[in-house]
Length: 75
Image 1 (spheres, rainbow, N blue to C red):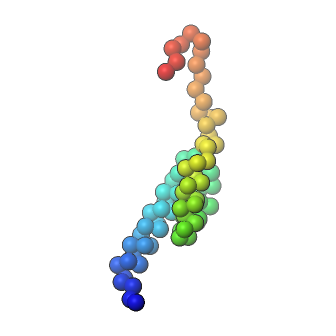
Image 2 (tube, rainbow, N blue to C red):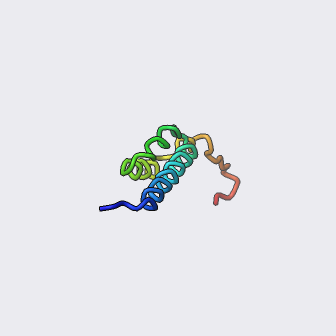
Image 3 (tube, rainbow, N blue to C red):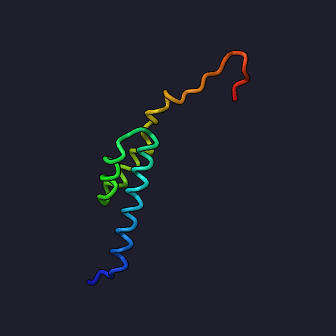
């Protein structure tokens, strides 16, 4: 059984894209981007890391909390 070179190239490109997306999402949510980028390179582990990032809460949420006074209309 011969694996075509295009299959390997597409797999490497998809792993790199998923690793980049994991690092961007981790940075946006306030987690270690390098850790999730390195986990994003490993096949099958990258799906677990992505799912974990999607389910983890935003660590910077307390910094961006909006303050509404009782006299303003809330959205």
